[in-house]
Each structure stands twice: as structure tokens, then as C-alpha cells.
Figure (cartoon, rainbow, N blue to C red):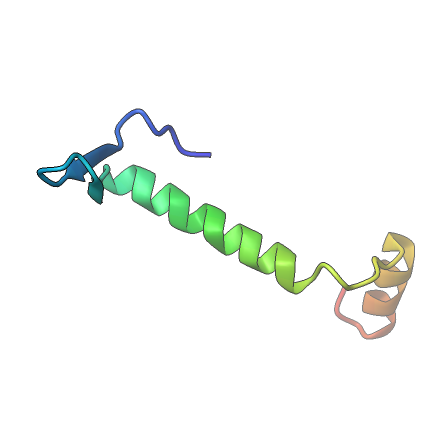
Length: 64
């Protein structure tokens, strides 16, 4: 999780938040976190496979 201490809000004349300023590093970290969460969500309904079976399958296919 990125540090949010370098995040600054741009507010309008009424004090409502309108924009966000952050470092490029924080922005990249946030994008990476979003990507990780998306990948996890896409695979949440999959049933895990036994590691030994996966290794045996890869060996049988000549990929390991």
C-alpha cells in the first residue's frame, strides 16, 4: 500500500475536494494495487489445484 502522506487535495472556493495531487511513485503503486486486486477478483471462483499435481502435469507435458 502506498504512503498517502504525499497526497494533496485541490479544493474549490467552498472547500470541496475537486482534484488530487500525488507523486508519480504513489500513483504507480496505486495502479499496481488496483491491478493486483483485479487479478484476484478474476480468479476468486477458481478452485485451487494441488501443487504436486501441477508439477506432475508439467513434467508429463515436458514443460518442466
